[in-house]
Length: 114
Length: 112
Image 1 (cartoon, helix red, strand yellow):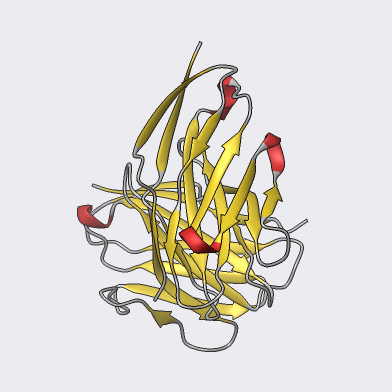
Image 2 (image 1 turned 120 degrees about the horizontal axis):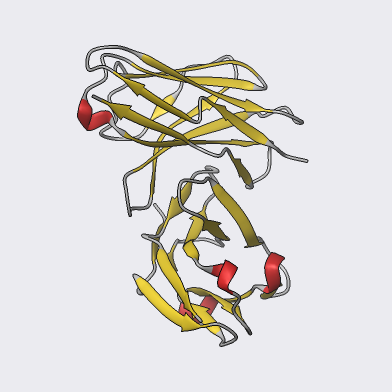
């Protein structure tokens, strides 16, 4: 149980285009979902927290107009990287939680912006 | 806000030898503590967690960790390492806001 999927697993796009990444909790309803960013050889940095039906809460330094998060249902959250640039290339990981402290992580999405 | 320090960036261990990864946390209240493992290009897999109770926690793949409040530590151990244990290991601490703060990670290399 507690499986989280992400789609796509990797994506390559041209600079200036937008990319949408989906995060789904497959066998449970997630009240809260989290989005992380991980640069090569580095740790995970929390970007934002989203609760179903409400606006996402962004961490300091994260551009909310660039990284749009939509948590439309209890099983789906999306992260859209708008007008992507090469510096946005990274590994994006989502996680989902019920009401407890434990988060269940997705397999990640590798974004490469050319 | 909480924070985590993993003092060891890289550890090399022989197959069959014991392994200990250090983790120190900073949090004003009782922390929620986790150890995750990440293989290259993959997401995170939970090894074990501590919320309360017995301070020696058993996890998957033969790992265990001990919570020591007096030392603000949550070190991860494995008595005998297998080649498949080569990976990146992250310690994380959570607070009442359900957010996790991760350490910088420790890369474990296993030599034959």
